[in-house]
Image 1 (cartoon, rainbow, N blue to C red):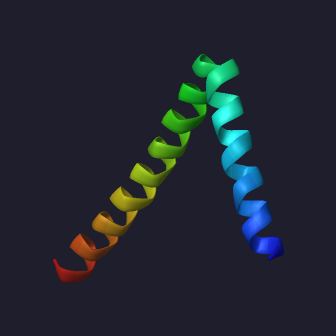
Image 2 (cartoon, helix red, strand yellow):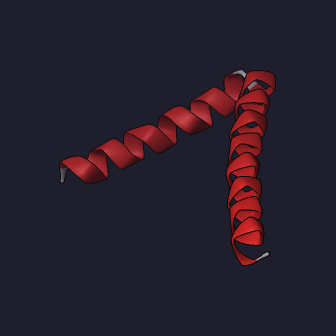
Length: 52
């Protein structure tokens, strides 16, 4: 029950954040995407060096 309430509150906060600060929200998502991309590139480099 608590997990469900926290999920809905998190979703509501996300919608509020995007609605009232779209530029800041875009910057946050860009930085998260960049971080995920860096991790993916790191794994790719690791496996490339492992096989080569």
